[in-house]
Amino acid sequence: MERPNEVRVYNFIKKHHSTIYNPIDPSQLKLPPGYVVCILGASRGIGEHIAYAYAAAGARGIVLTSRTSSHDLVSAVAVKTRSLNPRATVKTAICDLTSSNSVAGVAHMIEVEFPRLDVVIVNGGFSGPITLQVDEGEPAHFKACADVNYLGPYHAAHWLLPLLRRTEGGKTFIVVSALAALITRGPIANVGYCTSKIAQIRLVEMISEQYGKEGVLAVAVHPGAVKTKMAEAAPEEFMPCKLLAS
Image (cartoon, rainbow, N blue to C red; front, side):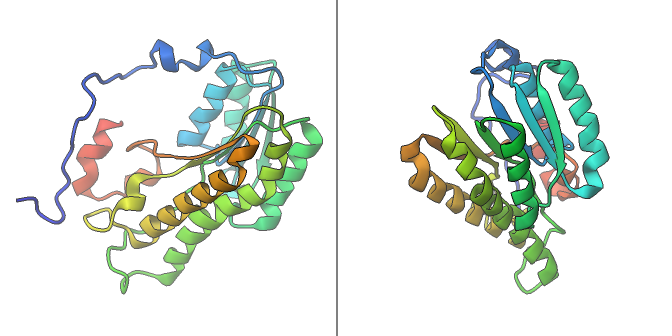
């Protein structure tokens, strides 16, 4: 019998890859001329490597944002992004996803610097200390999860969807989410994180419903168990899953 806190690893895929293979190699893609992408949360980890992928794919405009505390990191990412694609215009900006004015400022910068916007990727996330009971932990941590994981994507959608909607052809709004949204028990059923992620997914569903007819593809993406800085706080019971992605 499975114990309540037991983590079980299921292998649904017969063949595992440890390197980039041709069908997913971004350098094999041919993006449309003038393609512009904005990555909110690009200073390290997933957001950083999304930037490199779009550079390799030939994006002509790449906007990278970070919090104030991570701006030196995102500047270094911008340098490498330019080295991968010298023809690209790479801009960096400080952006606090929890602040409507801050995200509005990024939208204004994009409108001034670029003639179009093709993709918005919301990568910022917050998990806080793992809290497994509603009556435990700090309410401030629960609020921080909601502010970053749910309110943040709303701010991004509110201010950047108008720019996406003006773009002719396909345009995409992507939120880096997590299957943690579906978890209600076990060693990583973090109350604030999991509930904010399910709210995040419903927001993306509403964006898809409201703007899909205009050509906006809105998706929430589960990237898998990625060994990022935030994942270091995961409990020991989750380590086998973390190691699969390291």
